[in-house]
Length: 105
Length: 259
Image (cartoon, rainbow over all chains, first blue to last red):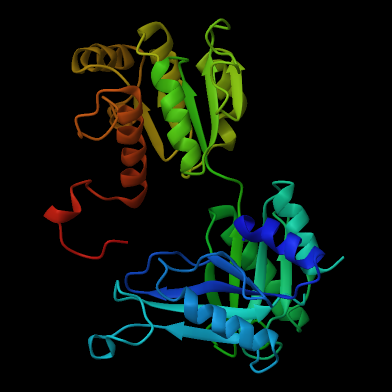
């Protein structure tokens, strides 16, 4: 969270709305621990990361959908299995649970 | 002030606190901020749940842990109506380096990269200066044992002490004081010969075998480090390996999960 504070501050000062995604659970091998945070503004700008770059693109889509009011806050899970080689997932074989929400608190 | 503003201000001021968020169940997204003394602001939507989560968050914060916990709607244990993500923003772990030598600057730099709050302590005021160790959070002119008498009680399993003086006059009292603390890592620099002599002196000073066994000496992993910078990597790698309980080998030569 600390590493994204400055970006969030800058975005909010210039009138952007912000969503944050935090790793709240992991199973198996996963590059970032619970607490890893990524912030996304309504222009699609990004700060921080929640994996080794594997799922960030999908998280941006999720965050933008929430900011657009198309989705509610909640848990999003990304995993990977051998028969889903082209689905969005972690190449390291783990599963991560993210809580994605608007910064409205 | 919003919960986020309070969190941001605390993080910027370096104050420890925990943020609890309902991530599944009723009142999704509700927040509770918990301070180390148990004081809380915000609510997860139920007074009993708030009380139980504040208690748990305080424990997580003390241990520097972050995890998702499950409760009944009113905070009951062994129920799963509500999932609460408790994120600890603990103070950074400390590394105290005794001895203001060339290796100290390199070790302080690498330790900073790893997120440690670094203190350099040496009794010799000429050597222990902020100018020589600008990367350290704190430079202290004091005898190691006297310094530990002041701060030793605050140190815990996340903290590390590295004795780099390799001069028995400083080493022995420093190590003797360090083994009385609860640090998770205690290492002492020196050649194999220095190590043998020092171990004998520590024994003469009354340290038990168990206390002597706590000292990682000679300090660092066996990676053939020569320069101060390489040595700093070898020491920090050993600090990590000791914390995670791994026998440090090359990943190529081991099996099992990487993290």
